[in-house]
Structure formats: structure tokens, C-alpha cells
Image 1 (cartoon, helix red, strand yellow):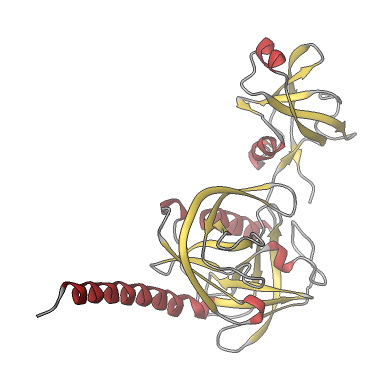
Image 2: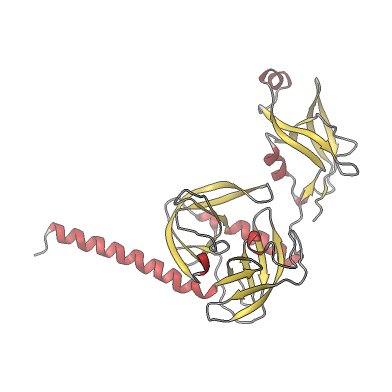
Amino acid sequence: MQTKASLSQNDEDAVLDAYSQTVTSVAQTLSPCVVKIEAGERGGSGFLFTPDGYILSNSHVVQGAPGTRGGGRSKPSQIWVSLADGRREHASVVGDDPHTDLAVLRIEGTALPAARLGDSAALRVGQLVVAIGNPYGFECTVTAGVVSALGRSLRARSGRLIDDVIQTDAALNPGSSGGPLASSRGEVIGVNTAMILPAQGICFAVAVNTASFVAGELMHSGRIRRSYLGLGCQTVPVPRRVSRFFGLAADSGVLVTQVEPRTPAAGALIEGDIIVRFEDSVVRGIDDLHRLLVAERVGVPTRVTVIRGRERRELTVRPGEAPR
């Protein structure tokens, strides 16, 4: 006859076995797809997501490799990719986007092992995730954890915010960047991108829905199109009395500190203007303005509301296509 204590131990063993089996299954499924990337003096991870050799990784992993340049198609580069089966192949950069810290590379090949991409919109806080990468050059290292938070924002090296970032406590280390973050079903739900040092258990991944869109654009045209105005600006507080007087929806805005000549903003905005709305959207700071300058705005007349001195003015500008 089993005691209550022995039953409890059996239950715990069963849970641990199920956990181990899940992590093992994910590792077996994805490890063949994970690659080690050597880009000049940089190193990192990536993963095959098509059978014909397309690889997702981080922009900062490939930046600095001889011949590469950010935000567009690169010249021939010295990037090498090591596959799980021991092969080492030369890779070309299809395109990279520093603003989302994503890059697409390609190697020659057919019928290559390719990871399945999942749906990051279906994620829930607390669910099991598995990260695979090459920390410090140790190939195909597997760590596991949970989704700690969703919808985070992370500052990219370009200065823009990456939105809809996944926070996880699955351990990442230098060299893990660009590797996959996977669900218990073995589907990629994020691209590992950063850790917070010296904190432990605070790591981030770009959501796979973002990565899928960016990868598609990079494969199509080698870059991501965005609009721009041609301003130097900074986030500033708006005094409460001013906010109330003009009926503003926020107590901060974007101060124009410089208008570049021969840009979309020239002739409409001037230094000292405080941008408070962009079409129907409230602008509380530079990050809001960046989010609103999407490709669909290129060449489209757009209403910009500013505070100029003691007046509230509505101006019309046509955002241009951001230079590479």
C-alpha cells in the first residue's frame, strides 16, 4: 500500500518527467535548425526558417562584418555559418533592420532543416519556453524558462523602440543573440535579442510576428521602408496650464530643435514648434512619433498639430521615404 508521501513523490516525478520530455522534444526538433554565425570579430546565433537556406538572426550580430552595411542589401561579406551537422558555409546578408534588431542571411542549399514559426499573439505569461543558441561559442546550448511578461518595449541600438517584445527568464548569454525562443510545441515564438546585465533572469526576444513581417520585407526588397520628416527633436514636458488652455490630451510633446533643409518638414515646421498630434494620434514623445512614421505615410498629406508660441496650429506635411 502506497503512503501519501510516496504518492506525492510519484506525482512530482511525473511532473518532472513531463517537463524534461517537453524540453528534450523541443531541443530535438529545433537544434538541427540552429546555426552559429561568425561575422568578422562578432559571433552569434541564428536559425534556418526555410528549406532553401534563409536564416533569421539579429542585426547587431552581422553589423561590423567586412562588407556589410545597415538597413539595406549588403556588399559581399565575410560571414560564415556553421550548421548542426558540422558543415561551414559562406553566408550573404539579404537585409538587416537595426530598428528591430533583425537580419536575414542566406546560405546555398536545398532541403535544409527549417524551424516552424508560431504565433506570438497567442502567448501567455507563465507558459514554458525554450531558448537555443551558441553562448560563448558552445554550440546548441539549450535553456528553459517561462514567459515573464509580454508587450515590453526595448531600445534598439539605433535609438528606436522595438515594440511587443517578449520578456523571459530562459537564460541567455553573449553568443545566444539571434537564436530561437520556442514554445513547448517546438514552434519559434521569438528571436532572442538581449539580456539585462548584471540582472539575472531578465532576457528579451523580438516577437516572431514582428520577425515574420520584417523577414518578408527584407527578403522582398532588402530593407524596411519607413517615412520621415527631417527633424531634430526631443521630448519635452508641456506645462499644465498650457495643456489645459489648448485642450491637449497629454502633458508632453516633441520639441522641434532643428529642421533639415530640403526635407518634408522644411517650409512647414520651424524650430520651437511642439508637436502634440500626428493626424488623429496623440504625440507624447519621440517614440510615439517614430511609431507613426510608417511606410504607408510616404507621400501622403498628413495633419500635424503643433503649439507655436501662443497659438495652436494645424499644419500639413508629406512625409518622405526615410533614406537608407
